[in-house]
Amino acid sequence: MGLKSKDLLGLKQLTADEIMEILETAKMMKMVLKGDNKKTSHLQGKSVVTLFYENSTRTRLSFELASKYMGSASANITTSGSSVAKGESLLDTARTIDSMGTDIIIMRHNQSGAPHFLAPRINASIVNAGDGMNEHPTQALLDMFTIYEKYGTLEGKKIAICGDCYHSRVVRSDAIGMTKLGAEVKIYGPKTMMPMGIEKLGCTVADSVADAVKDADAVMGLRVQLERQTKSLFPSVAEYSKYYAITPEMLALAKEGAILMHPGPCNHGVELPTAVYDCDQSVINEQVTNGVAVRMAVLYLLIARRYNL
Ligand code: CP
Image (cartoon, rainbow, N blue to C red; front, side, top):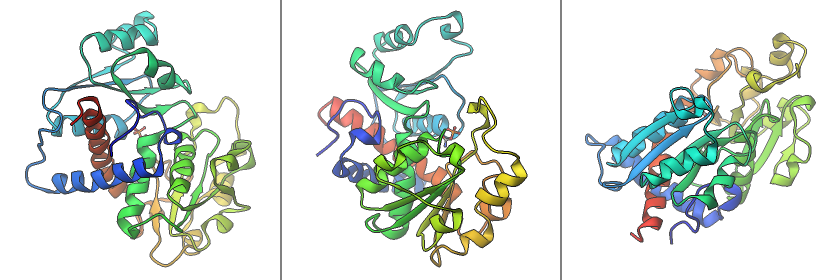
């Protein structure tokens, strides 16, 4: 069946069938990763460039490893150390990378919509690795894959997402993608950190952490994005962790065996105490592992579409 678009801009643009195809492909990629030889030839002779205007550990490294495991030529560009620092525009930068015959540009940008602006203007496939406060589709895909692996389906699963929803592109992509696959998504955070109209994405807004987490199959904490706050949105860390953190008591309200997730990086003691981050129910490290498999799947499917494989 394959992907319809040359680009992966957001989960808004994907159908449930396309999401399932990525998850099923990721299943196979994960088997490859578990083997003794992680190298495949899916991207042999192809080229992948990561173009990051914002910091990243997980997303950038997992895309880089994914592309290298699959045999592509790959390179990285960040703002410092490239001509972006000399004032070169986003479009000129992307056209420069495009002119070198690059197949896929994986980009992270602080402006919402930056990948959508580039996609129709260049030949390479654009993968959105996080744009402003809009979407982070591959994070949501790996979150969904983690739930899919655990339960075999997202249909009817209850997912609680608590934290700084206002700044979170992850919550937006998760809400869109998970509800497309039939999950019930409840979100909660301080009213000052709750985007107006977020229900339009298919989720419901809970009244408290307890209300969000009760009977959930998966509970996710979101990072308080202090770097994006222009003014203080909550009185103190102590108050935040008292009223909005996923404590062991709150996690105990979820279904027995529910999984605890976090996209990372985590502010320990703010959105989660370390005891919860490290608890037996935590699949945070598994999410990171799954990030490589999901990104291998995305790269493979985009290349398959480009070259009619
Ligand atoms: N979850 C996530 O996007 O992490 P990085 O910022 O480290 O890529």
